[in-house]
Image 1 (cartoon, rainbow, N blue to C red):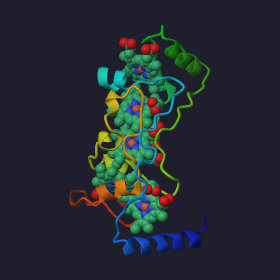
Image 2 (image 1 turned 30 degrees about the vertical axis):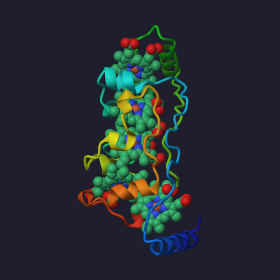
Image 3 (image 1 turned 90 degrees about the horizontal axis):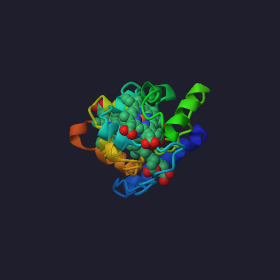
Image 4 (image 1 turned 60 degrees about the vertical axis):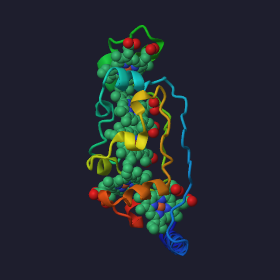
Amino acid sequence: MHLAKKTSVLALVVGVLFLTGCKFQYGIGYNQGYSPEQPIPFDHSIHVGQNGIQCQYCHNQVERSNQASIPALSTCMNCHMLVRGDSPFVQKIQQAHAKGESIQWVKVHMLPEHVKFSHSAHVQKGVNCQTCHGPIETMQKVSQFSDLSMGWCVNCHRQPENKAPLNCSTCHH
Ligand code: HEC
Ligand code: HEC
Ligand code: HEC
Ligand code: HEC
Ligand code: HEC
């Protein structure tokens, strides 16, 4: 979108929000519960719940960048060089790694392009993964826990103890 058009859309929306008393009631239930099939059934409850592996061991960008990032196969191979070599899924990982290929994980969470989000800003202020992603350590298959609507973001930013910014440009390009 051109900047001028974008600005006028934002101006219009601001106007509407003021007229309606600034109640953010966007898109309740956007993809909430979305849980696509993955090319390999990766199970967080085995890795985190039963084996106590820290989130950051795999999602190792989450404290310093906007993205949490999905681990490379070399991270899996730290264990699966040996662990469960009899499993056809683990064999698939080993073969892909040997050929220098990657696994095409299907994205679960997806904000629209006009939204800016930063993991590090939240994680560094002590907001837990589970506050936003729910009990991942019990999930055999990841599913989207929060609705990721604007109302969800803004309601938390609005809590006085969070001192989080509310201006539009915080979250929009
Ligand atoms: C052993 C590695 C490993 C650990 C430990 C791990 N994850 Fe993951 N995580 C993955 C992989 C691989 C995927 C991609 C496949 C999938 O979505 O299930 C993933 C996917 C996710 C997703 C969905 C990503 C998307 O596409 O939107 C979230 C959210 C997530 N993990 C959060 C966590 C949290 C929170 C913890 C700790 C409680 C954690 N993970 C621990 C490997 C790991
Ligand atoms: C304030 C809420 C919030 C917190 C806290 C949070 N996440 Fe996320 N996470 C999100 C949102 C929103 C997305 C979707 C981002 C997008 O589409 O750009 C996401 C996406 C992800 C993804 C998919 C890859 C990516 O970066 O887009 C992974 C993996 C993930 N989160 C893991 C974690 C882990 C691990 C933690 C804790 C260390 C964590 N998240 C803390 C809200 C949060
Ligand atoms: C720190 C060690 C460790 C890492 C890193 C690790 N795993 Fe595992 N994984 C395990 C353990 C332990 C088990 C459970 C073995 C058992 O008792 O069945 C397991 C089980 C599995 C299984 C189930 C196998 C089956 O057929 O039952 C899959 C699939 C799997 N892991 C995929 C992955 C993927 C993909 C990654 C990288 C994103 C990864 N693992 C990273 C330790 C690890
Ligand atoms: C559970 C509470 C919570 C939720 C949900 C939440 N945030 Fe935040 N957000 C915070 C806190 C706390 C901060 C840190 C404020 C500070 O730096 O003092 C923050 C900071 C930010 C920042 C960095 C601001 C800056 O300039 O430093 C951005 C960008 C942001 N949030 C966007 C989002 C978006 C987009 C969503 C929804 C997809 C969201 N947040 C959901 C609590 C939350
Ligand atoms: C804390 C983060 C945050 C703040 C602050 C924020 N937004 Fe949003 N906004 C989002 C997210 C996330 C979405 C995407 C989800 C949705 O549409 O509910 C969104 C969506 C939108 C949309 C698209 C709605 C649709 O139906 O497609 C518009 C327009 C918008 N915001 C305008 C604004 C304006 C104007 C402000 C300032 C008054 C503002 N936003 C402040 C996070 C935020």
